Length: 282
Image 1: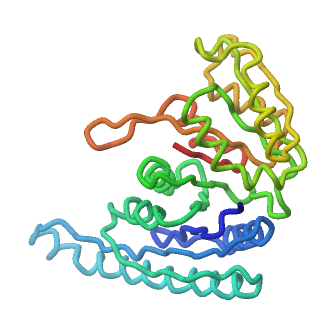
Image 2: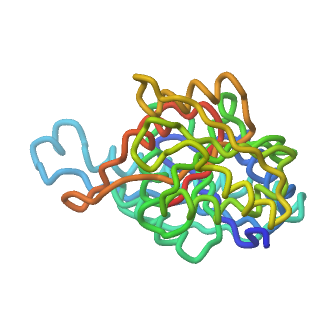
Image 3: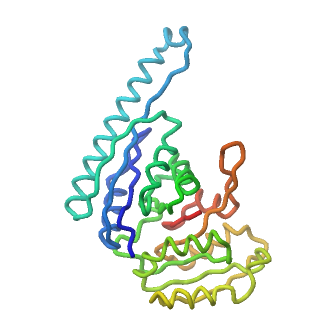
């Protein structure tokens, strides 16, 4: 069944999420079905407790001004979202919350736990919303769909082609299950295995995935490519550039260290290059 309850993260600091990103998310949900809610987090900025600096440059007033901007960005983005989503018939709710500047990602991850899917647009390779993507993937137990308007657009008319990265792992299986409603909408699905990457990625690994997808009415084909001496993330990126799928689905790897997630090589590379819209699941 399709993901009925979808959450869109709208950035509110230091810049607001673009109208184009909102439009793409609304049109995408209109295609796959479901209700779309949006969350915008107004930031609380606590300036350092430095009386001299506050006297000389007005740190407290600067913090208050930045908070005011964030509050206005929230209102504007949620207003645009509400208008577009109601017009498209996919409106769920508009959520305006406030959190410490460094707790925004954790706040979005917490709200995502009671949703079927979280959509997180990013603006550039240096965009801070990658922290939100990572927090949702590893902290919510739910999948995240990320895209970059103008560079890696969402397939707003439905994904014409989808590539599922398959290495036989539990994480890849979870990503496949989470992506199933979207895979059903695709005209073409490719199960991609990179051989000579690790012991589990043997030849023929994707054939049983093709069988399983076929049981669910999804026509898929298996494809294998050699890793050679390239990093696995580079292999994926090169394949995407050459084949231009509408969506790339992969399991996200990472492990916890000092309360932070250290990303696996492929996950880190793909998040910092975003050559196509991606569905990530852990």
